[in-house]
Image 1 (cartoon, rainbow, N blue to C red):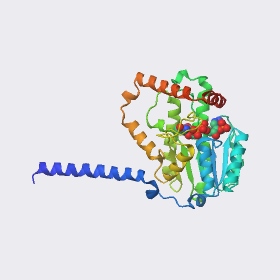
Image 2 (cartoon, protein in one colour):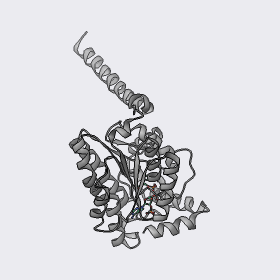
Image 3 (tube, rainbow, N blue to C red):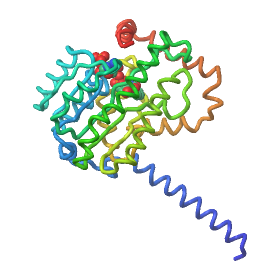
Image 4 (spheres, rainbow, N blue to C red):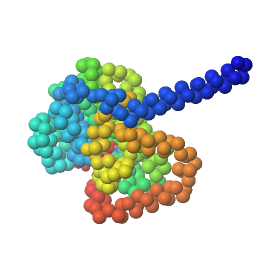
Length: 320
Ligand SMILES: NC(=O)c1ccc[n+]([C@@H]2O[C@H](COP(=O)([O-])OP(=O)(O)OC[C@H]3O[C@@H](n4cnc5c(N)ncnc54)[C@H](OP(=O)(O)O)[C@@H]3O)[C@@H](O)[C@H]2O)c1
């Protein structure tokens, strides 16, 4: 065998090994239950309480329910007392677990010392930093966002600051006990520079980098960014489930199967594939003016198709 033959055989072998490893890693994502098993007592072994921000509806509500079903008491937080009380009753009646309600507006300044006081005596094993909001219901250019100054503050306070502050409050207890789980909700749009969602997507990149850095610092604790694409909630104008859009309950059940799959996950196999596809399309194509118009038109069309459009918009305007 001459040198050239040896070179090509080695190159071929390296390619086979490279793609073999990739395939193996991908197969782990297909069968999360097998590769990343979570025992029945896993969550309660982390601590007595789970804390979920933005838990009165949508993805946060689903996390609160699932964690209570796993035997945890839950602290649920959002702005609307009446909805929180209703959710607390439903969780209590269904699971028999204790539920503590904290009414707060994460947009506001100087709220965290009060939250810290409320959480002080709890043995907290799980924190889900879920609260988040979009700058605008219809995707638009940065300068076209209504009330831009306030919008910037709202997005940064809700999507970025709250996560860091909640970790500051809850992480020390976890570090002391040497265990715990922190789930930070990002978004699929953070996978690439995402025009028309620029502020939102950038805030979610912060969520991911923060989670990944924190995981490397606190290895005894599971810290993970979860980046969904479509989940049928108020934020997503209650899009029809099916295809790539999950109900919040189905998404959360799926995402928890990936809890031990590393510091970042899209939380379901179809969102993992979607993320991979999105990253494979050249940005020149995705960022073309025509594509941006199509995206805007698509969201507008979807929204106007909804009979609930006016109700959704009214609620959204309350958020902003
Ligand atoms: N739905 C999706 O397709 C999707 C996709 C990717 C990422 N995400 C992310 O998933 C997370 C949850 O989104 P979602 O779709 O479940 O949203 P959602 O249905 O709109 O629910 C948001 C929750 O946060 C609370 N909330 C909103 N603003 C608040 C504030 N200023 N202070 C305190 N609580 C506040 C809401 O309750 P009140 O209004 O009563 O306060 C509600 O409980 C967000 O971080 C979002 O960015 C969602």
